[in-house]
Image (cartoon, rainbow, N blue to C red; front, side, top):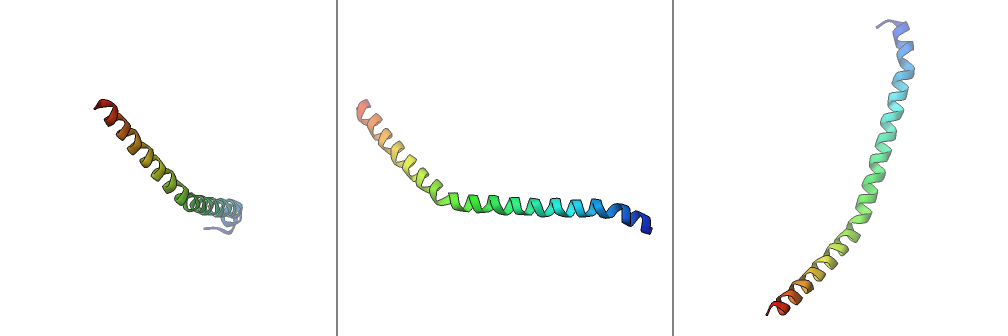
Length: 64
């Protein structure tokens, strides 16, 4: 690689490094959100299971 090519590629390389760091920050932020939402998701799933069980019971009673 010639010096002139290196000088020309330096801004591109720096821009790609910045973009890579930005993507890493975004991924880290998304992971944090997913981890924070996990307990809430489980609570909602448990509530949905309860409601579906109650509905099943009501349907069985109505069919009997």
